[in-house]
Image: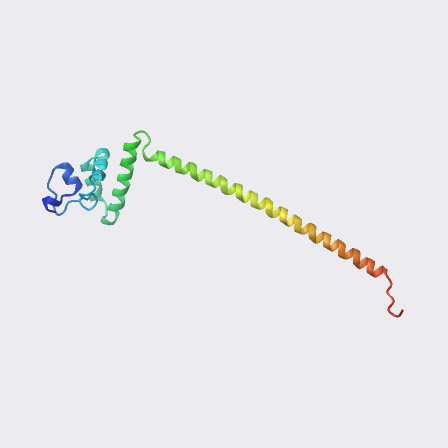
Amino acid sequence: MSNSTRCAACKSLRRRCSEDCALAPYFPANNPQRFACVHRIYGASNVTKILEQLPIHARATTVDSMTFEASSRIQDPVYGCTQIIFKLQRQIVHAQYEIAKVQAELALHSAQHQMQQQNHTTNYQDQNQYYQAAFEQEEFHFDQ
């Protein structure tokens, strides 16, 4: 890269940005905060070493992860991104509780509906048997 288009890492470190700069694709000049955050937590040489050990296709995801973890650590020095993980786990547990509660309510309503259907069917069958018995006891004379 030319000196006028140095990446954020090279600008921050006040060095020339070479054509084969390992950090340039992941820390563009228009986003200097991204590198500053990662540099503050991990250090430039550690980030460079990590990226050089990875296959090229995994580097962008790694930098995104490191950026997220570094910004989380800066915002919350004690828990960092684990605080977010704990919150998400609590939300999952709460959602699972809500799902179980709704499933139980559905099962209850379904059971009540089935009982009502059985009662209705039983009442209908009882009435039908009553009328059939009454009909059989009656003597109908058609030749009157």
